[in-house]
Image (cartoon, rainbow, N blue to C red; front, side, top):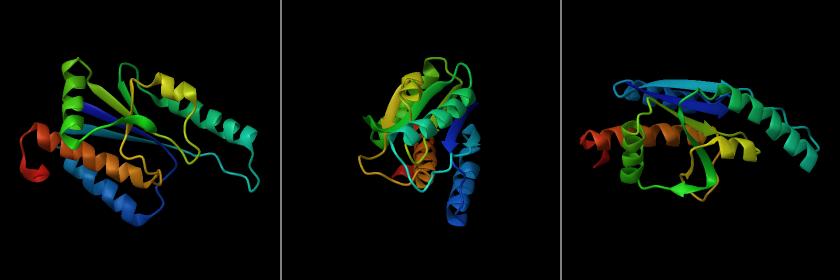
Length: 160
């Protein structure tokens, strides 16, 4: 069974988001083993500058890089990433598994984004939209699209 790892910076706080993640986790259990790795985010000071921003991103990057499982295909969510249709995203997941990967890791950065080091560690950058969404909400989007991808690849009716 395929392992799907989701590395996220920050904890879910809102109950409705926790409920949505729980629901999609339950639905996905039929298709994959889902692992959430929630990393603590660095606290933002009241006054911020470029140096502080870079320091925070570097600290979060160390946590992210240390959490990536060896031999996992890494897809990082980034505004500069490739946009997929749901059908093409499903095909992408299929292609990754055909290439022999038994683990896919998705990375969702924190409020300030990701360092170049994290982006370069990724096999591919993907983007769900050129619009910016809260990093907590994008978890639900990601799980929904992964679930949809499995439904598409199994020719099941959810997508239609």
